[in-house]
Length: 390
Image (tube, rainbow, N blue to C red; front, side, top):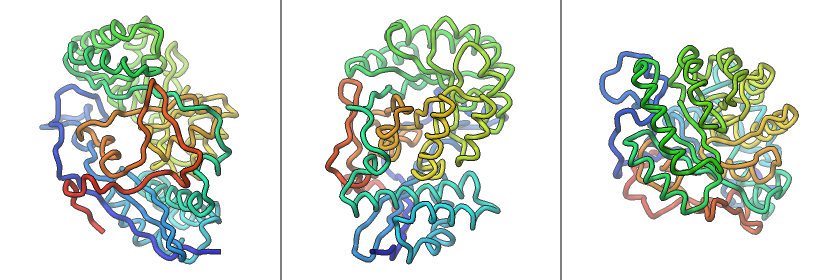
């Protein structure tokens, strides 16, 4: 038995080219405030965190996190690393509970749970490498020949540009398309019209034989969403995503009784958080991200709970830590997929930090049966565009 000998958390600060902020490209929770400058600023993340868990035999498991990397690194270094060093990585359930319960007074959600996620993902990657198996094989194995994906970019902008982007994406045969709303409550009826014009314009391009998902990123409120829902119904959206702030579970439950399925959970944490959402019938689609929600250990428990409620799980952002769970669970029907692109909001950084994430072909992506662990490695191609804190 080989034991964990070290845990190394690094913050990758992007210093390369970025796409400048665009007005009305995506609503967000800060829109309710009087803002100067870039209202989306606090939701852009031009950093990433990697977590390397190494065993005595030199095997290294690779985890990651995208939220508040500086604070997550401090949490791992000061609190979590001492808890797992000297332990057997295959005692992953014990290690998860140890990290969760010993930080419970302050770490149940947000930064604390994100830090646990990074360590837990690394431990699963480590177990895969030590057994010579891909992570999805450790989770139950293949439930799909390949994973269907939907194209997730289409930020709000000029109508012609959105239509051109959708038309270009169609060439890859995606199973669906997700667009963002650029206007919210403070923009009144004029903003409503702008939102509706763009939904209609995208539907004109993609037609009605594929799904269209609509995202608000917590930028609306209950009253505004109630007014918008009947106007959106004719466009047959698969779901309306995060219309209100994540803490407003009652608002989600109210809206989810309406004609359009409501999705959420990108900003929810742990099994208990999702039990509340499911008990309240607050969402019709769960969208945790494994590198926030508590890692693979927590995500697999949420998957089982959601299956019992018959609520599908479609994780946020795609990426390998999510794809393995999607492959291993029947209740995960499709994956979100961001194409490789210049650094804009921050999701794109995953492709600059890591090698190994699969590219979609004809609207599908594949995981290999013979690549152990998650199948990721640290990329050396863009090192000159990062300032790395160790």
